[in-house]
Length: 267
Picture 1 (tube, rainbow, N blue to C red):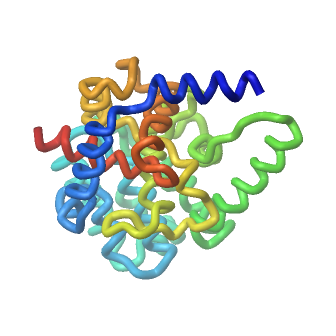
Picture 2: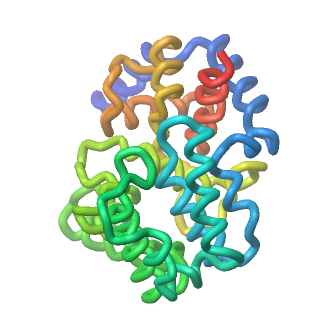
C-alpha cells in the first residue's frame, strides 16, 4: 500500500500543467488532418486498398523515413513507380533484384543497393510465409508474448519486428536500447484508429502500448516544453516521453506525435 501511495504522490508532483496539456491537445487536433499526408511518407499507404499492398508499402515508406522529407518522398516514389500496381507481387517475384543491382552504390544516403536488397529479401520471406506483414507479425507477437510470460521478461513489438530482419539489414535497428523511431512510427500508422492519417488495421495490438517515435522535431519540441529530461534519442527517452504523452492522451499516447512533430516542422 505504501508503494502505491508513493507512486501516486510522485505522479502528482510530475504531472503536466493544465495549460500545457490544453496546448498540446489543440496542436494535435490541428495537425492530425488529411492535409498532414501531403508531405508525409504516410501518404503512400493511402494509395492502396488491398491489405498486402497497404502493409508492404507502409514498411517500405517507414523504413526510408529519415533525412529531408523531400528526399524521403522522392526515393519511396522511385521504388513504387518500379513496383507498379502490386508492390507485394513485385517483391514476391523478386523483381526488386533488377531495380537494386547487387553492388555498394548508394541508393539513399548511407543505404546501398545491397542494403536495399537485404531488406526486400526479408520482406519477400515474410510475404511468402504469411501473405501479409500484419499476419506474420501478429503470429510472431503472440509467440513473443508467450515466451516473455514464461521467462518473466518484457517484450516490445518494435524489437520483435526488428529481430526478424538479419543483423546485416541496416534499415532496421538491432540494438535493444534503440528508440527505433522508424518502426514506432510504422506502428503508429498501422495501429492507431479513428484517424485521417493512421490506418488502425493492426487491431490485434493495443494503441495504449505504442511508443512515441523520437523524430528530430519531436525531440527538440519535447525538450523545449520540458516533457523529457534527456537529449538522447534512446529507448528510455521514448518511455519517458510516452508516459508524459499518456497524461495528455490517456489510452492513445502517441497522438502527441502530431502535436510535437507539427509544431517542430512549422516553427
